[in-house]
Image 1 (tube, rainbow over the protein chains, first blue to last red):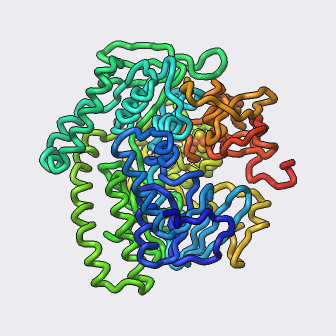
Image 2 (cartoon, protein in one colour; image 1 turned 45 degrees about the horizontal axis):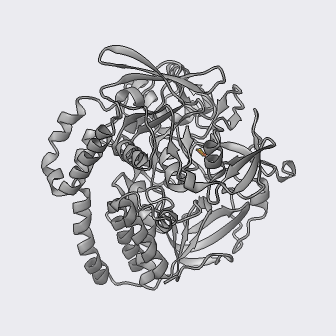
Image 3 (tube, rainbow over the protein chains, first blue to last red; image 1 turned 60 degrees about the vertical axis):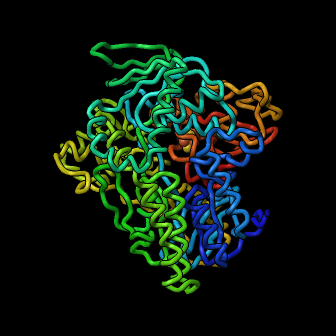
Length: 477
Length: 103
Ligand code: FES
């Protein structure tokens, strides 16, 4: 079954390069390779699965399946391995050119590869949850803790608090408890009004009864474990101990201020598309007011304004793992058509059942989007809360710059240095746009986002100098 | 804090600022350190405040450490190897490092 080769020598060309080894990327690569295309999948992690199915094969080998949804990742990886596609791991992509040239680094060596088509399947990142003290060591995201569980088997122990909103928060709590972890409590910041708004989408969500039941079962499991669950909490803060690490958290619930000792605080504020590549390619992005995030403009196949580049999965707007895998297959079918490997009728025939499955997978989305709509408090932080973690720029510094006439993220960047650190605005981008919009009384759509440029990962001069390529003189400087 | 179940005894050793720390094959550097109770992994160039890993997936760059002499590496993205030398990165970061800077 092991048709996948472990890349030692990297080919200079491929029909299709897929970026990202999560559900969308795995399914796209599998579909295209099965139908005869030469496919290379580049992934930044040491193993396939993306974040949602992170370390799925290693856990399966140890008999740790977590749950049925996670086990699905194992099936996607198996299908990928049987497809003949080539996976290159620990490959950090820093360049995608409109002509299909992809630049990436592995173990300090940079390489350029030329593809006829690039499918960007770089998924989602967690939305920042800027609260006072969120930069203290000991404050992490729920996603980070889940990665620790999946990759290293680490479970929370001691005074570990979870705070925020969204399905991942519950899922992680259930997984951590099942693995023998301890949680001090859950501070639920979901705005109380969300529930009513979500009920309006209940009709559509009934098509996804299994998903609804799953959510209820998670809630029940957490309650049965006796983990304190504080709802309607706001004004969350993290405070330092004498060592400069997290020592205490405080919040307001039921009208009273509470303070609790804490070793670890895990934050979650939903997920948003990872737009680094699509932004740097100057693909148009649209503001999605419901999901409060920008998403790259693409059609129902994932085609963009750059003919050689397609997008699949959460990177094109948050749809979840099941829908992402379907979107990956659709993007593969259209890529094959564009390459002349499939005629239009065959593409459409293959796509028809996928489109029906996609509609089913998306049935619950409006309900989830409404139920977990982010709290305005964490979209637009107050006062001295740090917004840009890299350059330590506070919300009030941003507001001051706006009052001095900085109207957009790029001006603000040169004025305050926000977004200029090594993360290149990955963490602060949306918060900066929200802060400007609220200070100006403008819409985030009008405010816009950082202009991003390749390379989207910091490269050493040594890597650049040694770019090992089907020689392309346009390597970035 | 995070704990490692007993069945997963570490069998590799890395050093952090000269102190030995156990790690398990497949751990990222950041995961191995968190399992050993090391939370603060660097101090910032701007205010020298302590930082530790935030995202564990290569997004935030808050886990930058000196790994085998190479500065500004993302500890959450580097897998441990036996004998790896890890140092906390303090203050100014040599970013876009010139290779001459790295031993
Ligand atoms: S912890 Fe965020 S990049 Fe490593």
